[in-house]
Image 1 (tube, rainbow, N blue to C red):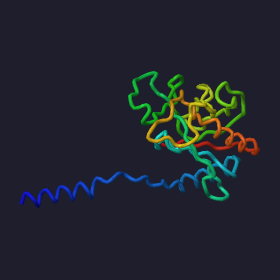
Image 2: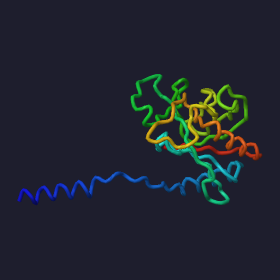
Image 3: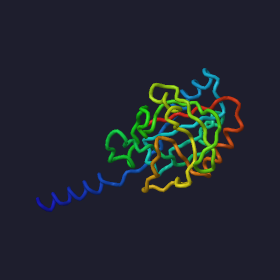
Image 4: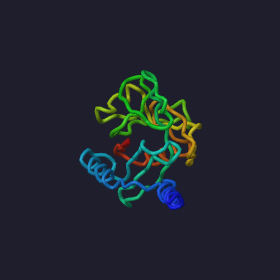
Length: 197
């Protein structure tokens, strides 16, 4: 009986505790909603930016989605905010927290309009203003939460290591920022950025 019990335990361990395998997320409903939004609001309908903050910061979670080919054309890692100004945040590297509060250093979620190209003292010295379109992010300009690059951000996945933390900006590598800048300079209509969790 004891031998049978040990075999049962071993079989349970082998069969039920295998390492978790990453399964690609299905963003089709988000892509469809994004295209509808762009059509209804006179935004660019060639591509948009999707950031999924539920993904580990050492993995690709900034996606450039092409509406015409219905494929992701570019992807890379991106930072999230420390969110530790008004309360302790011991999980700050592991999980993004969100707040629209000024000076919170938190990430913000929701839809943004990518605005004016401007000078940045960070990275390749280019930033794009982000205009929050929802109650969860309408303080973006006041908080100076912008799209910019930072040499400390890797240009490839670094999992299981984490990306550095920002003060709420979705900061990317210098190389990826050049890709984004090249794309943004080709469009006449505003580009949608959508940050989800």
